[in-house]
Length: 418
Image 1: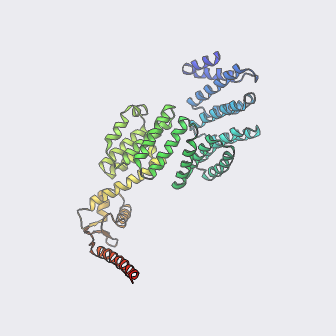
Image 2: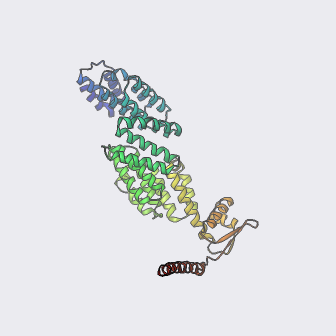
Image 3: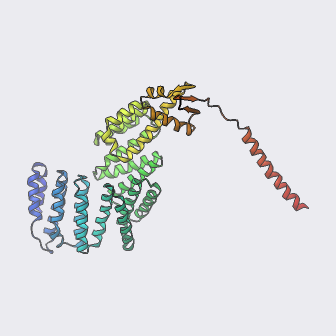
């Protein structure tokens, strides 16, 4: 244990020397009844995995996971499962995109099956589902989900079942099947009610709930879920805390664009300062562009923060909706003073291509946002006065219908008297 403590103390001053010490500790032969040595190696493996992750050494960490299999044969199955799961989690949390993730996970699953470690196999398959989802292999993900869920229901492993149900919800959401995503999330929450859920997993549940509420345009509820997710991830210092904070700001922006003040209040608060990044700056810039209701400034902001905004599917989806609303408001504001206006003039004023403006104007007319017609031959928009329709005919029909019901009722009563 002294060697492990010495290695931990060297992590900041001399990380390479710390890694050498960890390697020498984990390479030592150990007997199954030597609990002290087993505990020391277990701690060394955990610390070594975290240090390799900090240094972004994905290949070395993958090699470590493969090299410890002789040691795993000495310890109990429960302890071996815990060690493998912890190291695999550390490896996947790196998000290094080396291409080793799926092959490593499949190799670990094959090893677990050969050793007849059923619980470890299913835990690794749950991780594999997330990897398939992340890599866009949705058919593989759904096939694995269906197979694993049948096995988990037989074994009554509620913890893993909840993880798989949550993964199913994420896959269906990515495939834009919101009803099935909502059903899978409801199942995951029902399962979670009867077990203890670790903070990281609870945060993942809250994050998915917030995303689905956002899809239904219920941004107030979504914000509260994202806040819970942020607190959960922040408590375990997980990088997804930044994503949760970003989605909180997105909800503030989508709530009828209240202005940059509320977004600024979050950014200058304790949590905003801790997770200060270019991604949060992008959300602040979007809030300012939205408050000015200027489509040109909005487009400039999108281009400036292209990498931060377009890599996140959730943000991209809602920004498209915000863009459509801003474009619609800008077009209505421009054409309001006119009875006839050239579409080319509107396109020039708003600084957008003619085709996009013409298509959007057609959509606004069809949605009855204003009355008008497009004369495509002359390239002119003719705006009609938004006079209210006369309701006399509707009221007359309703009166006749009610009178008919009264007459029918009187006729039935007259028949009974006779």
